[in-house]
Length: 222
Image (cartoon, rainbow, N blue to C red; front, side, top):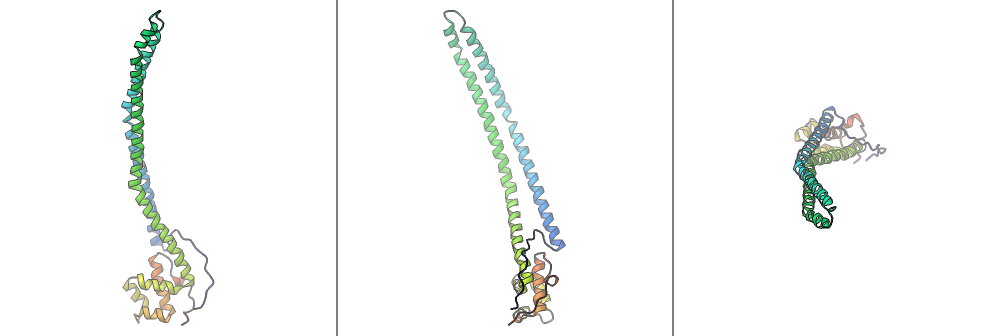
């Protein structure tokens, strides 16, 4: 087979044909919009769940007031001569009760915050992660395949023609074969016009320009 100079390694992120490129752009926009909607919903859910912190904050504030009241009373009672220490000690259970209320309120606030964060992440993971991951995998696979197809377009039209024979629709293959209709035989004989048309079928399937627009190299040597 006649050799060609190695082509430049072109990395395409979008198809060369307008229709396929438009579909890719629309898919990108749809994924971005969906991800934005999911993130917005997750933030809204997070803020909604945080409103459940109000009872915990109220309990903590009530505990602070109870603890402050008993602490003040204990401090005042401690100034009474002779029995001040005993009187102050009598207020200790109330102070401890206030502290327990404060701790319970803070624990409830922290628990609600943890639930809000967990639910927000759950929404993102369940609703956005599979979509974004699938989109990224499909786009990466197309980029890699398009890179090899562009290289084969300038270097190895035979390979693209063979891929068309194995992956293309029968109708398009028959049309590419021409009047004879023997696409496989034409590929084995290395008939350049048929090879180029078959390569165009494979390139069109990927949204790339046809081989005729890039190269029309010599036929294969037997």
